[in-house]
Image 1: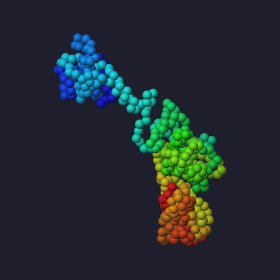
Image 2: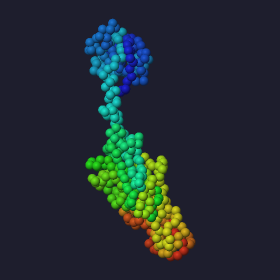
Image 3: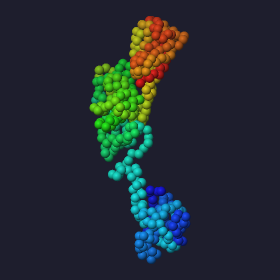
Image 4: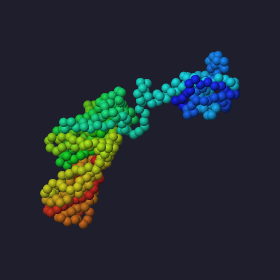
Length: 406
């Protein structure tokens, strides 16, 4: 049935031949000029006689159907609380605005609207997708703020709501929502020697509990679904900066809504900066991996600091890191390199790569490992757990490791 039906002002005609009751009758009209053919229409039969005398309401019938040529087809009899009955040839047929038209139209509108005229949210998309919302990161006085704004750039409000599905519940956000982290702290360990001055991808979360309502946060990890999966230590690489945790509980639900890039400076100042945002470094949808990013690991077992190519990517609860140091003089028989993000409590993880020792390529593959909850890739020349590099000349271990961080 069409909820939204068109009509025709001042339309009146007559039946060509009489009809009985039921839906097998052919209802042919003397004229259908101007009647819509793309929607159903409700026509009124026998409201008046051919001379214009108004009939009793008990003799009136309204029939809903589609106009096809000169006939009313696919019809339903006795609508709008009228009684189905027979009508003779010459019966007057009119289009009269009626309760059935109005009620069906209102029912159709209310499927997608509230009674105050605002739109209802009705969608079956996955968690984390914003409706009428976007992430707006900014830096002022070296402090980083991540805010949620309406698509018009204004704060959410009762007349400019943002909607988000967290779990199986759709929440409306009707007031300003943001989180700020001031300069002066080594947030997320992002100001460490490995990461300072380098662009890092942060994942934006929305969480919920019944007391605080919807909260906003951001973190280096993309895999959390509950508050308990974040570290509460501000300098930990799995920390989440959240707008309020006054009533946070371990089981509070969180969803990723997007990702942005930011940089924390080195030294005690730890000042924030953000790039000019594009569709590459600011993602306005759920995403669970970073771009390929660079870091500068701390290398031990050498007479000088790190140099080379070091690239990593966080992918859900794993990190894929490429190590390729070069031209560094050895002063110990061991070789360790720090990781771009810490390891989870998942046991020892093993890898194979290629070694360079005493300024020469090692012929066979070289093992490496990361220990449970460790922060270092421990590298070996030929035999696992045997430190046998030469404590002079150039050495290196290169390869790709893909390890669990949770």
